Length: 64
Length: 509
Image (tube, rainbow over all chains, first blue to last red):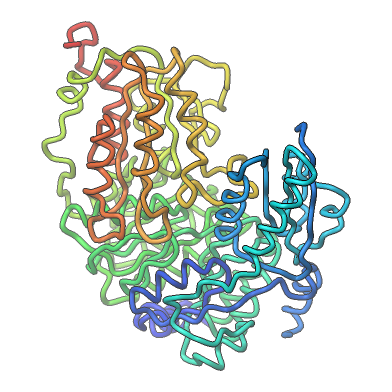
């Protein structure tokens, strides 16, 4: 993707669109966004792969 | 560490760091309890608990996805009682009131089934898992803001390369602040919309400049955080360059401000070349940098305040603030300045002001020309309390202001300290009432002949805490409040007679 296409894409999909957020981690961030009327889905996250970071990393690379 | 320690491990039980901090504190305050901590069982957290004398063989066996409860009490019976109370707290239904949804997905994939038009993942999970979550989000078409820190440089580079290929932005890791399309994300402030676009490798730098632009009557198109390491040679400014392209192409952005510590030389050259190719005007604030050769459409400034003034087209901020007059109302200053900052870039900006006044300054986060911190030293010490050594295993001091309490009490009692310099950063993500936390600490420990206390408030009146209300609480506690962080540093120097043109011997007591 060349620079102009990429910046157009970021402009179209991020800067010129009201943020719609998937929140993973601190729930307070999701609550504050929700209170501002921002669309947010809070993920009830727990450490994947049985809490093994190396395995979680590998699984993310494999698309799991 | 004389008491009796017990551990309990909850397998596969996750709570975020703020929830754990609240629980830990509540349990540590109970009668008969010497110390308590609830932490996820990552290797780093287990080391912290071990150092605090809170880890037994039971806790040592925990994995990163397990919750460890450590309690040290004055008797085994009391430790067991409090442990039961802690477990009951954990088993209470979580307070999800106010969340936008009833059912909560457990993965990004499930979240996107629920809300397929989502465009941004905000990631604040423990650093060990953050890169994996960011990768999953990118591959599902989301832009990413990574608040998480403790992500390896190699992982950051790989993520940003993948994001570039996908045409997606990775803000972070360790990105505390962004404002996208008027929406404050993580630590950010309620500022009006306008035509100034900010790009920053520094959270509090973005916050101070955005708030000062608002104070001066301006507004923001967007504020894009890039993470503290983006301008290192290894990362090559990938996100900064993508953000520059995006804001350059954005019709709502007329002027762009770039805020960072000094970049690697090769990265600075690439950035300045890209800036020179833009038709827009730029303000460059590389805190502590010197000898920049700028293109014609860019101006360089030394401080965050000057960056805001330049972005406002030369509007002067803090008009009517006279540090020399204000200093004259304080008791005669003597000794050194101790700056206790929650914002890293606010600490760096104060160092710039001190150096410009010819003062020698030491810091745990020294800018070029400043010295490393010398705990026994008698000179000026400006401390970034958000640095890793203060936040390992606990939330950032902007969330948990108690991180500053011990150092503040020490400074108030020290005969070496003439002036205490503080920042108070408010806005979304921050503590609900940082000035209200500081005031009783100051009242309880202040001496009549003790140090002068000076602060500034980074925030706006549209923020949940309200900038004016926070300043009023500080003033009621005897704090001199300056209009900006830079002005607070100048006032500190004025109290010691260190501002050019001021005669320290000719001042009212």
